[in-house]
Length: 321
Image (tube, rainbow, N blue to C red; front, side):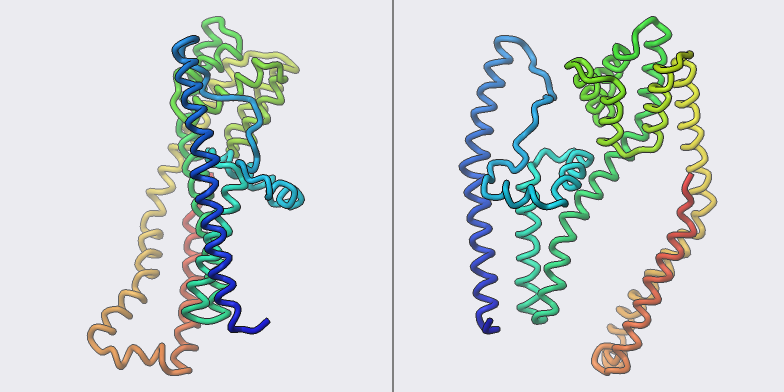
């Protein structure tokens, strides 16, 4: 292909993708959302507040039928669907994949215009990584919030069991009393069980939606108790106490490693801050690291060693409990 045709082709694909995305948003999703809103308002007036969750399988590709046959053949679709569920993102995977492609095309175009082919490849990789990093961060925050709420939810379950409730009734009680994400996930588990799914399978689905070791201990204890018997309230109470003790130990570790983390932060920030100060004082001197070939090699070596040291310090101070 003629190199002069690459840039017009990139612009054409970017425009086509943006137009298709806007068409889907303005025609498909907007009208469907309006019809759904009218239907929900009607149900509120007839039957009261409708349920907030549903067991119906949503349209995987969100009104993008041309993607169905192609994306179903990819092995990356199922992990993406699981990531969206864990991050509590309601967008269909087809729409998310379209966002990934748009971000990659934007990065490819900007990188190609600035630094050529290699810059375009790097921009495409960066554009794809940014939405993925957003999903990972959202999942991490949600799991962390779930972990903080889990001991209170277990205490609520224990009180329900001691009052004579069945486990599933206590699960429903915790779902109604707790806020998101614990209340939402427990409600989904109760709805799955209430619609005929085996309780063990519903608990396994809960562990898939929330990848948390403490939650796996909880579900394992419940499943073993259902098979062998025992005092479930006492087991869950000990589990709640163990989680709280782990939180206390984490706090102590953070206090003890605070000096190391602060030292690592200073060592990471010192070179760029010093570079900026020298650039203001004597730009000709510091720009030798950018303009001279030997200076570029020295700068790249320093950056590589800086990243390596940052990873080592992070590995040392981050102690898993």
